Image 1 (cartoon, rainbow, N blue to C red):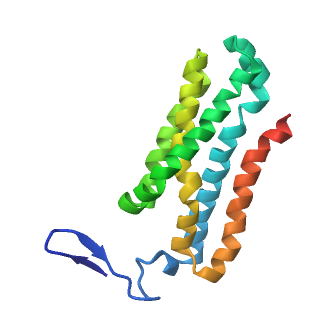
Image 2 (cartoon, helix red, strand yellow):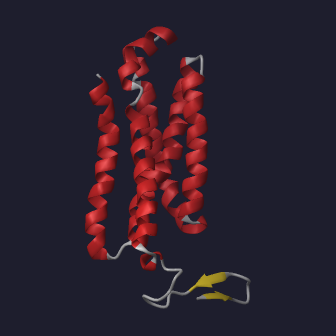
Length: 177
């Protein structure tokens, strides 16, 4: 039930298991679609962190830096995830998860493209930081999305699947070596 107070704020009140606005009352098909999209986002954004590791030697030659210096791009990605996670949770609670996912994923893709296209080492390191910063939204609030859509018993089945997507995303680069 939607209600508007005297300040013009909209309040959503849940009326139990018959409320169509409650994500836990959506059909299993709708929730499964949402989780499938979330699985793909988690997989690809976790993969982006490790994707440049197999090309470390080639990238260090191209940029004229040592292999140790080239590892800075992965470190900056992880630093971006750590710093972005501080803001992603509160932001998703304020503006909503959908908007947080959409905006952060779009900006993440722009910086991922910038990281691939930059001709300088400094540009790569800076872009990799922002790739991590904007992918942190997906990687840190996906559990909240599961909690919004599933009751506690069913969450126990969905969380391991999300963890699997994250682990396979980060370990996909190991198969490339």
